Amino acid sequence: MRKAEFEEVSFKLTPTGDMAVGLHRYLGEGSALPENQQLFMFSGTQNRATQPVFQTSGE
Image (cartoon, rainbow, N blue to C red; front, side):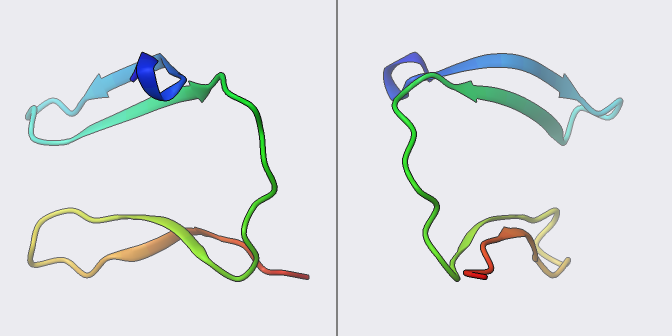
């Protein structure tokens, strides 16, 4: 991740080891967020629907 200008801050596996949550800090130059675009989504297993986590509003 260093090549992409991110550094790992924290990384935790669930007790079963099949899922994890990580926190990374961007070290590169900032830029404006795109308006009215979904940036990313989390998904669990293939049987679960994905849900948006963060969306820009453009307001």
